[in-house]
Length: 472
Ligand code: SF4
Image (cartoon, protein in one colour):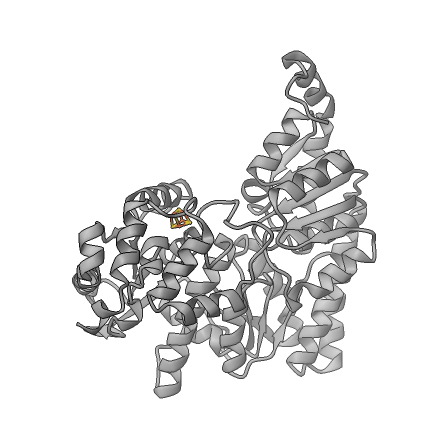
């Protein structure tokens, strides 16, 4: 079997025996991957997702992003291949975030890894799941050890009984955040669907407005937001294409058929490449706040060749209610924002327009051209924007700023509470609310008001529990 020959037996045995993984050292894993013939794949990941200041991810296992994208799609089976502890953690997290479907798992040990039996086991598992009456696609995700050992998912057949088979490497030592891991699978599916559409007729996507040209919105959003954007662009004769990441296979054809792709979340580097390869113009930033919405509508109108009168109508419809919402929801608070969702700069823009002062925004995601308008807008208003922010940078900023509210990741929120600073989780609270249009203004400003109102409670707690833990 050709595939078996590419597995580096010595490296595989040593990785498995040493329990290498998050704590095994990035260089060790990269060395092993290179010896196992994965250099090209690792180089491609490094180009798309340049590394940050820290060696290993500081948030949850990055592969969760790919797993989540697969689990959220109808008629798609998702299979993990990795160490049992990694798979346990990932399936636990998937349940925690509401997945109601089973996660497939192909276990291995030193022997099956070294002898190449693991590849055969994966192939058998995929074939047993690839039943066209049940699924459109089977996704296999190589975690750290199988990737570093060179398990060659690219040698799996492209389909079985008409069911597509998609194998991806998503190692923590190659994909820095779970946000970018969403892009790895989303792009692999777009690439597959693009090849299908280029070679013949494909299924008609659902939910399209007859005759309307569409915008493909890239990024997982709160469900109301695409509808809000749809209402904004309707005067331009545009509607919203099926989402990326997709919810079912035929969505992919609908997204690729768009007039313009919109990198609402700016870290989908590989997915954007697929839209560009399909000949679609790409617009960055998002319709957030007054300035952001006006600029984004202009950029969309330019890219989609919308007549001036229709573009003016869209601006008039969107901006009036937004201004009224901002006027009615003024904030007076100093806030730091840190997260790993990729929408941190958009959240900060909206809060600044509502009256907040934001000296620092940290995002675990990398800098790309698609967030440049947001970065420039924030920097012009005195905000320091830190891409690939480490936990240490987020904490240092919070200590230096002493904000009225810290919006952050779990460890940032924990530290803020120790310091008596009101704080709120970015992922569970802010990302789980609308962001665009008047609904976004109302939701976000309500969170800030609710959290800053109880400021004295935090000071009371710190004095009640004593101050020995507080490192000011
Ligand atoms: S797969 Fe995830 S949890 Fe497992 S070693 Fe890699 S980064 Fe860590």
